Amino acid sequence: MTAPAPPAAPGPRPLRLASFNVEWFNALFDDRGRLLEDLQLSARYKISRAEQLTALGIVFTALDADGVMIIEAPDQGTKRSTVTALENFARHYGLRCRKALHGFTSETEQEIAFLYDPDRIEARHDPQGAPAPSQGAAGAPRFDTGLRADLDQDGVEELIRFSKPPLEIALRADGRALRLIGVHAKSKAPHGAVTPAEFTRISIENRRKQLAECLWLRRRIEGHLAAGESLIVMGDFNDGPGIDEYEKLFGHSGVEIALGLDQPPAMRLHDPHAEMALQSRIGIAPTTARFWLAPQKRYFEALLDFIMVSPDLANDRADWRIWHPFNDPGAMAVPELRDALLTASDHFPVTLDLAL
Image (cartoon, rainbow, N blue to C red; front, side, top):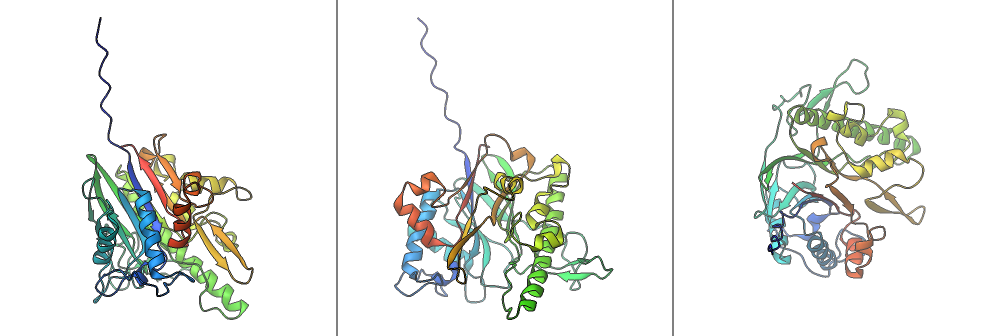
């Protein structure tokens, strides 16, 4: 009698990457990067710093990701360190993701950073493109410099700068090389508007800036795809298909530009949530963020956060998930996690499991 064959050795578990916009993460740390786990109010409405930090610890632990692209990460400056704050946070909550990576410094107190498990991932900041001179350059210059582009098609070029330069990462996991780009595109909210005319003017200006940033990003994406590299673009685009009336004015959203939907299949990125929204502009669509609208006295939800992948990664083994406390059965079934997701941020994490 022939002995049964031994069971096949299990393959490596999927690589889990997450994108998470943490609302005012910076307000939870002092200048030395120490956690402010106290009863003082956080920047979130009627939520203490201890409550928000505890909720974030629960959410990051539940995600159990190998790498998290953090949008609105703690500030980087002469007195504050993004890396120190995030690594202190990871150590305090015993996270696998315990090493932080930061790229170019933002003009705001909202950085883009990558928190990852060094036992699974090798990662380094690897910016692409040539630095542009002070007056900017055409094409796809390095993200911390300036782009010159004719946005109005009026023959006059304008200077575009990222307030939050994308974070470009060369990553290796399970022997596989990947390119990651973390994005926090320009907000379209008309801050500072008083009159209806100002609201319209600022909204249009912000929309144009957001589209210009996505055009710049798209040019970098095309360079990676043309080189045959495995690419993941992840973060908060402050935009989505059909999200506001100004999309009609400009003809498309920044997300559609980044995806490259007008390009051949080999030059397109894939995100199932974006594609679902594009196919059902009226009807069912996923959401990743939840905001309170005071005039209407209700919450508004939007699809703003994405994980887009190159064609070689878009296969049936790739698994996307939005950790929405009311729409995701796994999150809703655990009351502690459901409540933590609502307390931690006004955005919900998005994860991607990749079988490399």
